[in-house]
Amino acid sequence: MSQYNFDEIIDRRGTNALKTDALATRYGNPDLISLWVADMDFKSPPAVADAIIERAKHGIFGYTGPSQEYYNSIINWVDRHHNWKIQQEWLTFIPGIVKGIAFVIDCFTSRDHQVIIQPPVYHPFRIIPSLHHRIVKDNPLKLETGQYKMDIDGLKAMIEPASKVLILCNPHNPGGRVWTRQELVDIAEICYEHKILIISDEIHSDLAFSPNKHIPFASVSEKAAQNSITFMAPSKTFNIAGIVSSYSIIPNKELRDKFNAYLESSELDEGHIFAYLAAQAAYEHGDEWLTQAKDYIWKNITFVDEYLKVNIPQIKAMIPEASFLIWLDCTELNLSQKDLVSLFVNDAKLALNDGTMFGHGGEGYMRMNIGTPLANIQKALDNLKKAVDTKQMHR
Image 1 (cartoon, helix red, strand yellow):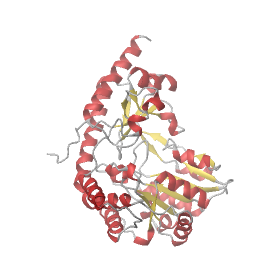
Image 2: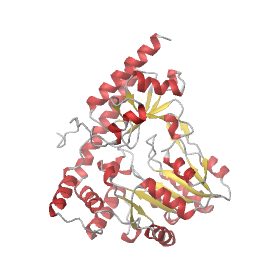
Image 3: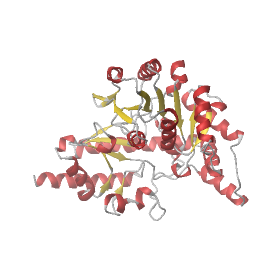
């Protein structure tokens, strides 16, 4: 029996949560069922709140640095869960992974340089380099037997002298792929040969479902280790994104020294009291919570898949190998993207992510966050079924 109540409905309205309080601005309706922003509607592990409350009781919130226990908690977690032995000097706090990507782009590239991404993929991978006036080049993923694969030959063919960075989503968002060791080795070899630095965003790494096992990119080979910057965080894992407790892992001393000097020049490597405390508490005491949360999320995934097959067979769920996000293939509805979004928002009263925001290959898709109580998902799917049925009756 679960020790934690993931069925509890917690009203997040009025807390300035993007997921609820930005609905009116983003979707034009504050009363939609919110299944878009990639955080969960579950309470974080009690140990996180306990650590924050206990520290708050002290009453003094002066300048505070990371403790040895903080570093140890990360090192032990990554070793225990991902079989990757990292060293303390490889670690640096960063104020968010998207910000970290921007820092790498700014630190290691110039305006005439190219950044390679693998769409459909998390949209800041495209937006951030573009805002920094870098050239973004697509190496689209291949859709085979309902899952994405990397186009290794396509990557080889597209590389130019100006290609300087590849941003890897590991595991993948929105498709939920856990990349194979061979896929990671292949891109490590190619990028090492062509001196293309790899940023590996591994924020969903703790949410892989058995038998899938997340493989840290830098762990697959020495070439991967020496030519990459890995970003991890407890934020998706334990639903603490608002606390901001990300970190970089950089085995290569030359890369690390350059990146850390960039961070230090603007004091970007300094966390706040609760960032250090929350991460440590989650990593030290969150194992059982995570096990039960993943069990619950997997049941939600199974529910969505079975519901769609029985009730809305025109929509197909890409079963994620990691994460609480489901990529919905809606192409058989034969709607334009505008009409597809309208079906979800205006007819079904649902807020999901428009697939086109993830770039090439996102047309006809919607991204659904199922990190929420099952009752919310059931209601959402019932709404969607009615909307689809009504739409088809009037065609």
